[in-house]
Length: 164
Image (tube, rainbow, N blue to C red; front, top):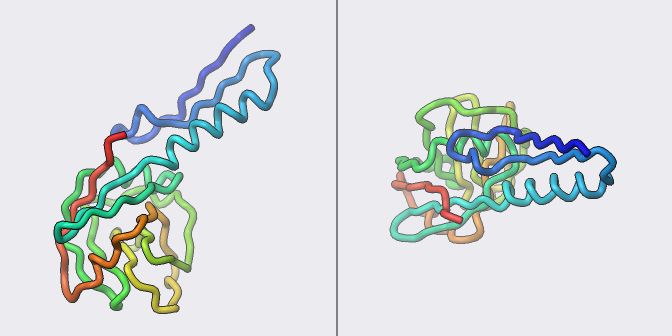
């Protein structure tokens, strides 16, 4: 039996996590699908810490190339300014991949890429508006604590990969 192992590369910061496709001559499709699902779950459960004003939020990275490229920038400390009374935003030190799916909607806790600048934004309130073209790309989803961002003016935010 021939076995072929293919590691789809991620950014250098995440090289140990990837999509693994295992094909064994004569094996079932179920085994291959199981290996792919397991690897995707590993990627989609990567977490980041977002620290602001002594509070720490945990967020799960999205399973897309944009999120993986964002993770390669970490750790980051950013001065995030308020925008529209719903989000904190800051420019990134360099452009990152825009290969992730775009959306014109958002939820409180979404960490997104606004690609025309390139900027990262974290939504702490929903105002019923949509995101204008070209839309945003989801980087991560915060699991609570976003109210720490609901303060006037700028905040200093540190974003780091959570050690697993």
